[in-house]
Length: 399
Image (tube, rainbow, N blue to C red; front, side, top):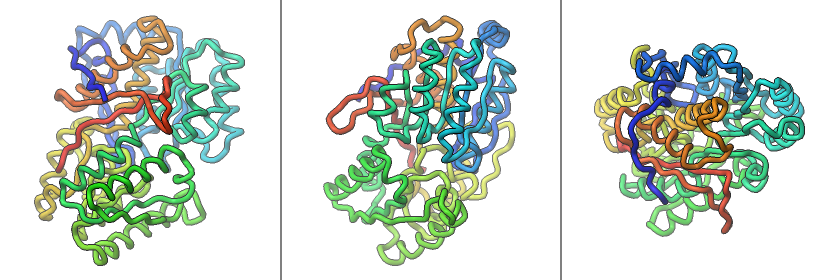
C-alpha cells in the first residue's frame, strides 16, 4: 500500500475551507459553518463560481445519513447555479436513471457525481454515456459489483473496505478484543465488497485468536425501518456483552446503526474499533450526547477532544477508535474539487490519479488541521485489480 506524500496546500484548500467542511455521515452530524477563504487563493474560487459550466450531484437522502444532503446544500450555497442535482430515491432504479439523464441533458453539465452509489447507478451512467460521453462520471462508495461499476465510471472513491477488514480486527486485538460481533443483514451481505470484508474479518479473527460472531439485524429499508434496526442493536449489544464479556468488540455495516451502537457500547462497556464510515462525527456526537458549537462544526479535532473527555468521564478511555476526519466528507469534497478542476481545465484528463492524489491529500490535511497518514490504492478483489476504483484508508485514533 503506497502512502500519499504530503504537499503544500494550494488553491484546492481555499475551496475546502470556504465550504466549512462537514464531518460525520451517520445521521448525527452537525452542519459546517463556512470558513473564511484564503485571500491568496480567492481568485480561483471566484472565477469558477462565475464560470458557465455546471457540476451535477446526485446523493442519498437524509434517511441514509445527513452528510450528503448537508454537503450538497453547502456546495449549492457556495457556488449557486454551478451546482445542480438532488437526492435520489431509494430503491427506484427507473427514477434514478431518468434523473441522471435529465441532469446530463443540460449541455453545461461537465461532470455527474453520485455519492453513496446505489444499485442502479451503473445502468444510469451507461444511459448517460450514450448521450453525453464527454461528461466526467465519478462516484463515492460502491454498492454494486466492482466489475459492473469499474466498466462505466471514470473514477470511484471508496473506503478500502476489504483491506480494512484486516486492519480493524488487528486494531481490535490491540485494544484487548476477545470476541468480535459483526452486525449486518442479507441485502448488505449480497454486496461483494461488504461480504468480502466480513470474510476477511472472520479470517483475521481466526488468525489472531478472536472469536467471530456473525449477527443479523433487521434491514433499515425493510418494513422494520431504521427504528427497528436501531432498537435491535440497542437491545442486542448488552446481551452480547453479558454473554461474551466486556472485551467484546462490535461493528455494523450501516450508518443507521452507528448512533445507538456507540451509545450501547459505552453504556455496557464493550469495544468499538471503528464505525462503518470512520469519522469523529459518525455516531459519536449523538451517541454520546455531545453538542458541537456552530463555529466548531467543521473541526474534527475539536470533536475528538470532546469525545475523549466524555469517554474519560465514563471510564471508557481507549475502548473506541475512529479516523481523524470524516471518511464521507473526505471523498465527497475531494471528488467535487477534482471535478471542478476538470471542468475549469486545470485537470485535462478524466482519469489523472496523480492529480486526484494531490487533491485528496490536500483536503485530508485541511480537514484534520494536521498532516494525516492517508493511503490511496487501486481496489483489489478476487485476484483482480480495478483501474477505475480506488480505495483509501487512514491511520486510526484510539480515543
